[in-house]
Length: 176
Image (cartoon, rainbow, N blue to C red; front, side, top):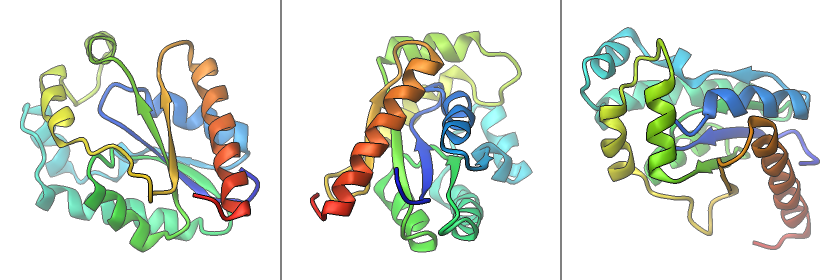
């Protein structure tokens, strides 16, 4: 992307937001913020116990991410957030209108296997079904791109950066 937008790396748990986000931030030369760090302790305890968050749990978390994104307006940044529902992305855009979304997508079996392999993360693979049930993919009127998560983290980051560059070019031209 040519202008310093905040990129929200989104997707269900296990798609690699925490891996791709820092790589993309490095590639773009902007800071990275880990979305999980914005969760209040009660949210982490709830997810660790295998209980999905509800919207009431998510609003303060999304507001904190939105505040960070707003603080980076015009400077750029990358932040991870599942941002599964349109209403969540709308809330983030209300705080940071120029934010763009990078939706990491992939085969459910691949995502689940990655979740089972990771160590020390509070989100159990048992909650993956609830993530997919809540997921509302990006819509045509939302600034963002989708990138498949097959391949190495470097391959995924390269595809993401290229897709974001194309999006930036379209936005400059004023095309959807």
